[in-house]
Each structure stands twice: as C-alpha cells, then as structure tokens.
Length: 609
Image (cartoon, rainbow, N blue to C red; front, top):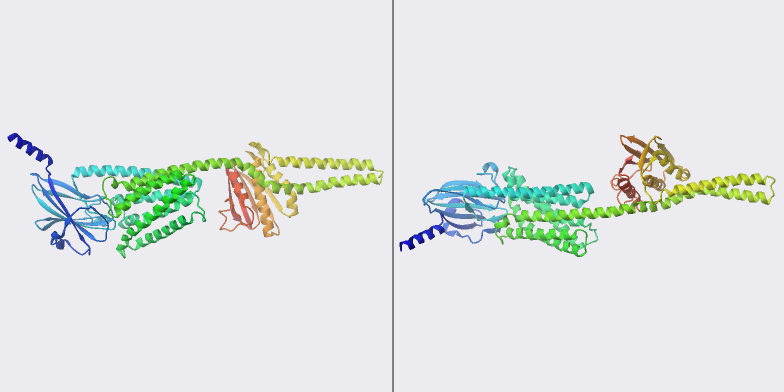
C-alpha cells in the first residue's frame, strides 16, 4: 500500500504544473472602458477559445490569472509574439489593487515604452503560492493576437536570439537578390530587372518592419508605420507591373488581365496615399482590411496569367509560374491569418519571410534564365548583323555606283561614237583618233573595274581585323559618295591625322560611316537645308580613337534624342533601323560606343573605339 502511495505521488509530481494559468478576454466595442471599470466587470470576461481575432477596431482586454503552485519564487516572462502595430497597457493587480503597470506596443513612442524590444513583453515574479491578476488592454491596426506566452527568461532570450539569426539569414538572401537584380538592370537596361529589385527591397523592408526589427533599432515611429502600411502597397504595384515587362506584353494583348492589373494598381495607389492622413484620422489604417481583398484579386489574376504564359510556352514562364504558386500559397496564409481564420503560431511566424524568399529565389532563377535567352538571341543577332548591315546599304551603294559610273560610261559611249564617225567620214587622222579613244576607253574601263572591286569590301564574307590607315579609309567613303555630294552641293570638312593607324574590322566601321552619311543626306533633303555641311573630325585620346560626325540638318527634338538608337524609332517615314544598326555594330563588332547630341545647327555623333 505504501509503495502504491509513493508511486501515485511520483506520477502526480510529473504532471504537476508549477504555475496555474487561466486566460479570459473581453471585447470593448466602444473603446471606452478604463482599468477601474474593467475590474468591476470581471464576470463579463469569457474563456479564450480563439487566439487570433483578425483585424478589429475594438479594444480587447485579456485577463490572466496566475498562481504559483511551488514553495519557491517564480520569475517568468510574459510575451505576445505578434509584433504588429499595436498599443498595449498592462496592469498587475493584487488584492484588487494595481501594483504595477507597463506601457508596451510598437505603436508607442520609444521614450514612452517600457522596453524597445521588437515584441511586447514584461516580467513578473511570484512568491510561493501567490496569486495575481493581470489585465492587458490591446488595440491594434493589424491582426489582433490575444495569446500571451509565459516562458522562462533564459528560454525567451535563447528563442529570440535564434529568431534574430534566422531573420538575418533571410535578409542576407534578399540582399543578394536585390544586388543581382540591380546589376542585371545596369547591364541590360531591362525594366523588369529594376522592378524585381525594387519589389524585393520593398518586401525585405516590410518583413523587418512587421517583425519589429526596425522598431527595435529605434527608427522613428512614423517611418515604421510608413514601412508597414505604405511599402506593401508599393510592393504589390511592382508585383502587378513585373509580368507586363518580363513577358514584354503589348497594349493590345491580354486586355482583361491588363485591365485588372491597372485597376488594382490604381486602388493600391489610392490606399497608399490615404495612409498619409493617419495622424488626422488614425482609423484610416483599418483600410488595410479592404487592401487585403485587392491583394487577393491581384494575386489570383497574376497566378492565372502565369498559367496562361506557361501554356503559351513563353520564355521563363515555368519559373514565373512556380514563383507565383509559392507566393500565392504563403500570401494566402497571410490573408487567412489577417482575417483570424488561422492561428499566428508555429511556422506561421516565419511564413511571410519563407514565402518572400521562395518567390524571390525562383524569380531570380527565372531572371538568370532570361539573361541566358537574351545572350543566345544576341549571339544569333550578331551573326546576322553583318549580313543585314550589307543588305541595308545595297540601295544607297547602288545609287553611289550609278553616280560614279554615269560619266565614265558616257565617256566610253562618246569615244565609240567618235571612232564610228571618223571611220564613216574617212577622217585622215582616223588612226590617231582610234588610238586616243581606245586609251580613253581602256582607262575608263579600268576605273569602272576598280570601283566595282572597291565595293566588294562591303560585302566580302571574310571579316578580318587588320591594321589600316584610318584616315584613308574614311577618304575612300567620301570619294565613293563624291558625286552625290557634288550633286546636292554638300560641303565636306574632314580633319584627320594621316599617321593614325588602327587594328579594326574596317568593313564594319565603313558601314557605320555610310549610315551616318545616309542619315544626314535624308535630313538635308527632308528639311531642304540651303547650305548643307558635314564635318568629320578624328583624334586620338590616350589609347582610344574618337570620331566626331556633325551636320547642320537641324538636329533632333530633345524629347527624342535618347531614343534615336532604338529599334524602329524614326522621326521620318523611314524604317528607323539605320542608327539602331550603327549602335549594334559599334558596340558588338567594334567594342566601342556611339552617342549623339544636338550641337549648333545639327546633330553630332561621337564614336569612341
């Protein structure tokens, strides 16, 4: 019997609690009750069955009854894991008397708060067998989490130390993604890289804000509110814009999807703008509940759109679809928590960060894949560039040849006619006439042959880098077009040091030069310039060669000066391919750069090789 009693006492001691805890809550729908009134309405408190109340305007009072069941002092830390934007007042009551108060919450100024830790907590010490009542008043503009955890101080510090390491790891990954996105943007100048970087940056700031890290670092309270309520709207705007640029969607494509995205962006912008008035009307922060609906509609639209892109086999669509599945899942959990359907517990503490990291990593892979695709296409374009450049000059070159050959052919015809006339009229000097005119025909034919062979170096298959006398090559193009310049009374000014030699694929450079000449000729003709002039200046600067090409054709509108090298851009009725092709040749084939600016009476191009 004694053995049984000892065994019973042992088992009981195993399952005994050192602390009895009873939790109840009361919703103050009018936000009007103070602690004294609450203490007189203890019977109105009801047991807690649901810890997450979602987004609510009402103040909520939590009543926690504690009893120390041991014969020694107990020191515990009581905390609420939801950082959030909240105001928390804690009242410790013993024998119906308030013995201690705490001012907490991340909506409270730092100098008015008990501590600056990222979540709200307070410590309590109980004497042996002591009972105490704790009343906690909570008001929040986000999700109302009314669960308060009672934990040993050492366990608390260990838990949040490792939590800090986890968030630091998340922040490090996001930082790498941000740097990657900005780097790709500055290299390729594609807007979707910039949107991705700004979106990732916004998500990172929001994560650190909503988890309380930025508040703990002491940033101003208004700025913390801005990060929590404004930044998400900005992030979702970027989220909606990203696929339009990533897949290069045109205005007449996917009209319904684009309409939903644009409407969502407008509503998110309005919501973000209203947040600036929270000091005048604090309840404007509760609009976040409607903001969640917009987010859900936008996410669902983007998910459906990503499925469509995948079915259409668009480049990178598999990565974009996976990223949206991840984002939709975790953001969906966030929405369920915001409406109080799910508890803010377990892995849900980190689900926003996990979702953000997962989405960003998959998108990063998609962006790198898009870079690979661009590179592959670029290499194919470069292969076609030479052939296309030759074809684009055939028309102009044939015009130049016709001007060069017109007079020599007339000379040959005149010589033949002269010989025939002398023979018919039995001119006594017919032998001299035949000899002289045959010499003219021979020289003229040789000129035609040299001209024809000269044209071939625009169209030869082999492309060799060779050392050339740079000024002589430019002179060659000027001589080639000389008849055209004389016909249109265009004055050419050419300043170049004859000693300049350079290793270059000269055919490509001469093609670029012909593009610039053709561009000026068209501008002269279109604008009816009375005294057309073209100036070419070549100079060596350190180890670089700088070529200035200027005309007086009136230049380009300042609104378009940045666009003249874009594909298909033209101020006239031409195709607009010429200057785009020139830039591609200079950058891809000559390893140089070409820029343009309005100067004096016309347009000035600068080529640096």
